[in-house]
Image 1: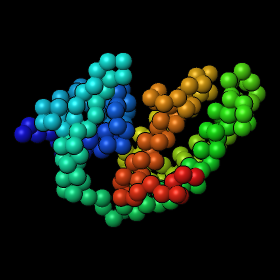
Image 2 (image 1 turned 30 degrees about the vertical axis):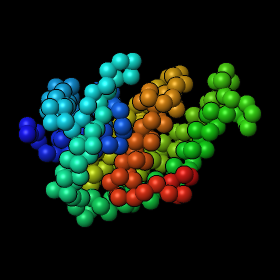
Image 3 (image 1 turned 45 degrees about the vertical axis):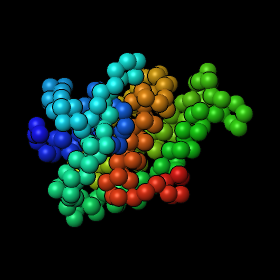
Image 4 (image 1 turned 180 degrees about the vertical axis):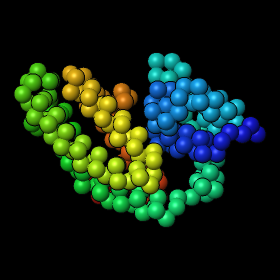
Length: 209
């Protein structure tokens, strides 16, 4: 079998397990790999049957069942240290109440009330919801900053969420919650899944906010 650096492959397969179908740009942002390095690891993983490529209108890379098996092997070979485990557990527990608030803010962004969709024509209303998102963002940044001192990849969520928030403030309303758009909501869901996956938890009632 063709080999690649275990840690790089672990990061890549972990990102794909968290994300599902990932475009090259999103996978690069999730792993911190530049275009050349990402191409090398994906090409090797393709050759080894660990991932597959989907082309067309929605293109990207997917992890295969064999890739999930390899990911499990890599996780077993490179387990979290005690401090990393403690940091991830603490981040997950801190995330839950913020997640509940984020869900409420997302609901307000999508619906002005029970029967009125938000068409984003009311700039005053949108500005108020974005202000609420700013407060949620400040809370999650605190969680990520603390945890990233032990688990470095969490800092990448901080950076990506900040960029998505900048797009929202710049007038890109889709950057708030549009699926498959690297929106704030997309990245938030990845973070949630990462916390669940890394701590070995199953999604439960507490995760629904």
